[in-house]
Length: 270
Image 1 (tube, rainbow, N blue to C red):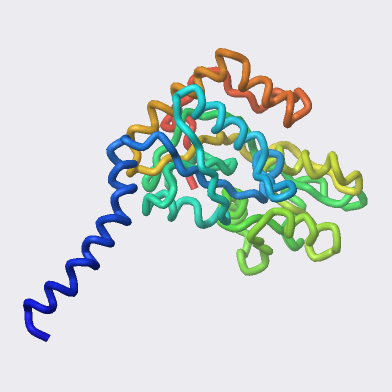
Image 2 (image 1 turned 135 degrees about the horizontal axis):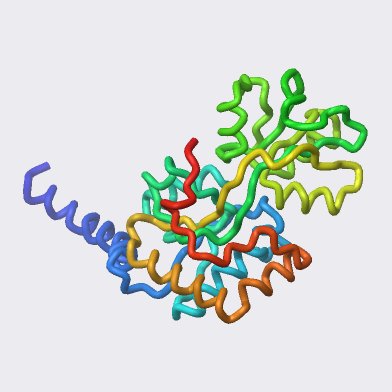
């Protein structure tokens, strides 16, 4: 094939690639008011899917923030361990999935100010002899892949080959209920939500960590950080933020973050 023919062949291909890249460029320049937001629907009550509709605290919150800032939201569901890579490539503009603000994650994505105070807890069957984290060595522990729960177990000397890590937390809970695991370590509000619906389980011991959730934002959309923070401040001021705690947590406001806590101030290390 001669050079002329080769160039002619490449021309439409290059045009097509430029067309596909155009929305990315527009988003990077802040010219697109629609934001693509990732969510993992296996994290109730923050995100879940009911009759094909994605709903939850985080979903209502990001939509309220977007409305306050004149933005519209397109929700894209995906597994939790695909969220950070998708933000890095620009396939997502932002993500809500109960994402703990961590120093390692700040290297790859930006975060909003903190919007929820959480921590890890231990969930066991009601007839279990396990009374807290110190009793877990030698037992089968289940958790969700690529989360701070898995990091915590590794940091505290657990052989990760012996820890059952699932793509979604529901599978970890199922393992606990069917005898495939002796305990689940996960975010306390989700454990409490499961405990409320399943009276055969209980949480034991104190919270293992104190951590904060933030809205993860692609570094390809630096313009969104200020907008999302402004929207978060607005829904705190007008009461919508508090109303979401009433709606999804039965009025339990222990997770409310009413002060402005920047990612740098609250980030936890791996």
